Length: 271
Image 1 (cartoon, rainbow, N blue to C red):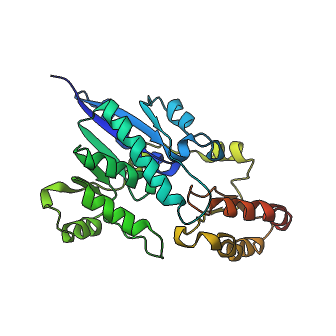
Image 2 (image 1 turned 90 degrees about the horizontal axis):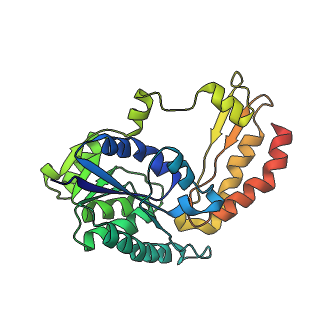
């Protein structure tokens, strides 16, 4: 009897970090074979070509799905989803998985789940039922992915309750917890010394980790919305070290990066 083929879709670096324990568990199971589909920001040099990190982790990439990201305008995400559906459909036609696994609430995953469910491939959704709020598209996309998917693996009981309230059969919904907890239990994270060496920081001094993404529905306001945060960072004491992360590959990210770079000199002089 041949092993069951589990295709896993990943579209960005943050998502992959949470999928790592899932991929590892599939890889370690004697009756399962994973098929890894890599897409989105993983293939973008502006975001570090993070597919290389996946390869360094020892995983084989079975297909690369390029998603068309055009100019930063109202149609950019819709165009990306459309191109993603076409490309994921191609990949799934070639791989012919028994089950397809998608994660969370990103537009790349939304495209993937549309393709798989329309191809009648049993689809499992991880981290459905959560709530983001704040005017972003996350909630509507996540819930749409839930209704399209056939199996649901949630991180908490409240999320499970929301999915059940959507009318999903109870046998389809499983409360499994947050995958990142497996990483913590296995000590799979950077040590203070590694952070110190990588960033030339003194881990004995206070560190602020700052992350802010553009709001897709208000992408034209990305710079304006970022300014109060940068102003607040500039008021910190000089001995406080700040790590500013890259944003997600959402519409508006270019203006976010421009704002950070434009203020980098001011921040470095202040901090």
